[in-house]
Amino acid sequence: MSAHLGKFISLEGIDGSGKSTQARRLADWLNTQGRTAVLTREPGGAPGAEDIRRLLVEGDPDRWSPETEILLFTAARRDHLERTIRPALEAGRDVVTDRFADSTRVYQGATRGDLRGLVDQIHDDAIGVEPDLTLILDMDPAVALERGLARQSGEDRFEDFGLPFQQKLRAGFLALAKDYPDRCVVIDANTDPDTIADAIAQVVAKHLA
Image (cartoon, rainbow, N blue to C red; front, side):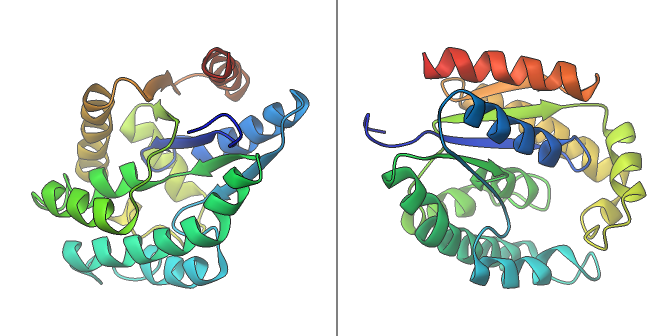
């Protein structure tokens, strides 16, 4: 993106890997560096997208087919892009998002059927934007699943698919990092939050430089 725009940074990873905590800490860190960061999330990040979020993350695991999920996630992402991400970047603010299109590539495109081609086609047509930098938080799926379920957030539809699904997700994210080495950096999330935040800050500082 051109120099007058802010930076667009996404955090990705399996459920329970600490993305929300680290996204918040990264936004706070960027603000201490004299930048102005907008913290957001997917699905959600704009009023209409938040309405769609409730359809996606609550209820029976088999509530939607993978194809329907792809369309719902893309609709939420388009609203997010129009109302939150693009205006912030154009105003020179950095955007830190807890998930973006890579989650759809892995969750619906690779683990719930061989639908990656469909995901990429719809993304190219409807979204057409990638983050400047993607941080993939990698951790033991069994530990992450236990942590995710312990939250009892009511938004545990994907955790309810069980450990084999989380293991597939981890493999999918690691494969994605190899597919997009210019923008994806894998972060070891098997340690304490301070160590993870420090590692992320080092990567982002290098990117900004």
